[in-house]
Image 1 (cartoon, rainbow, N blue to C red):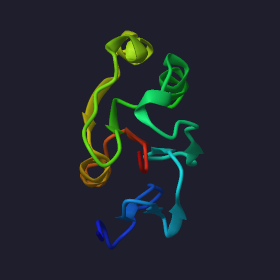
Image 2 (cartoon, rainbow, N blue to C red):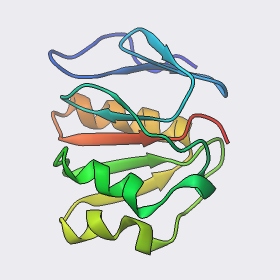
Image 3 (cartoon, one colour):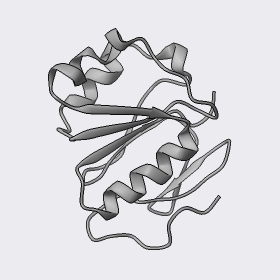
Image 4 (tube, one colour):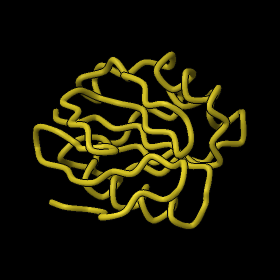
Length: 124
């Protein structure tokens, strides 16, 4: 599914997503990835929601987003709130949805100039 045609100035944009990959700034990614709105992409190191630990979410705090859009794979899956404690304590909002919806939401927020980060599980 194609998501966005243009790349706003100095922002990461998600162009398309399939069950096996996501295309960000024209580069295909097949493993879980952190997509900050205005910083380099970073591998996330969790293949499934069950693999996530508090440390995965602690890494996000350094990016200082106002909101994290968490894409949990092909289906929406919630993680235990304790895993996201570092984000909550830092005043960072978190919205959980399936990865396809997270990609669409991320692009909308980036186009509005928001400091958002997409934390994406590509397939689970």
